[in-house]
Image (cartoon, rainbow over all chains, first blue to last red):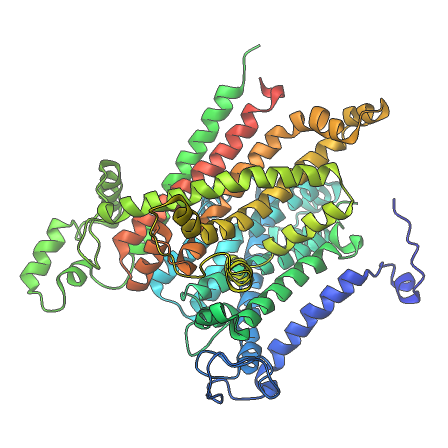
Length: 284
Length: 316
């Protein structure tokens, strides 16, 4: 057992140990969330307006991140891109985790043929490489934002299912579930009131990790030109548009790459540094 | 005592076969249940209704979807992959040369990344909690958490733009000398190595550390064995199975990486062919490429499991 030697009053009161890396990564995540939320109000220039006579312009006052391949303000495009990257990924991860976790818990409670068929089907879905799956759907139905959200969600349902089913199976063997069953409780009550509260911590941590996977896949698809379509652009699409600036090390191609990296790395670090209490609630 | 190994392996292969069937089902239906009539696409808008009807019968397009699925699978087994919509060339011809290129790239990456990753992963575990281990761990987490194209972009910036060692984005494909070959393949292989090796380092480090926490290693420590001896003689032989598993699993990241790397470096491989086919909606080509990718992925995953079964002495 680790002893809590922290002296901060806040930490002592809440019983959580505050970790500097955790705080730093949380601030970065919060920063991008806020940027995505208020994006249209804080862009210094219009995203479509060509304001620089030069393309791939350097960073300078007024054009803080330089200009892109058409001489548009990169900072404004990056700020609005945050909205697409964060928004689409968040929507997809909530759908994926909700579906996966509900099915996973139901499988654990129902067992038998339902469990077997669901597990086998979702395992098969899982054995299609994720990028390939995305490519196929885009080839089949074309790329629009709702299609992207649903595809990304579908790709990550099996992972969420597997994870929550493994946790729920452990809980399901406990006595209080047996008691609830004998009381005659139905499936919705069992999964919502008896199992979910006991696995919610790890499930939320898993949601964060899956969010990172989805950001990576979305950026990858957009980079291939098969994700978010012009005139909209997420960070992956921004890198694609400006890839021609790479030989000159233009900020237009470096900055969106860095934006993706800061977001995904800090979500990863945040989850690694979550207080033990949240992460492994079911393990104790 | 009879061995359980053959039956376990057989079971694993059977699961792989079932999965492959479900996957081919998914690939076929995802790409056939689309708006648009194949015969009209092939013949063009100006075709007479009779010609379209004739082609529909010839291609079995009026048969139920399940029957067409059977024809399609039968064709795959005979090596008949259909005809590309875009340029009316048999898909098999389009794919064969490209597949060899992709395999060359994947093979080279494997040759470079496996020794590199295992050395780094095992030494990091050996000197755990030192500065060296810290650096390796942070670097691998960094690479794993960013998309492959960011790795590629940064690699080009460092090696081609600042250091000027390698050509940037142009894949010249003139491999007349050994030096030319090195230069042509360097950037794609370097990028893919980063992506694959990062996974492999993490998994092999974790595998060695797990065996280091066992009682017999503690015993060796107590009898005074040195740290390298502890790792190499006592822990490593027992960590071999999880490491082999990690190698096969990490190599499956090649599939995702290859799609990005071939696109960014304009490498004439099968992933580039597929990305181009997606933008022209060339369905037979997409189906075949998707099947090849899924097949490769399944082979790697199944190999990982079988290696784990084979190297577990408790099952012998």
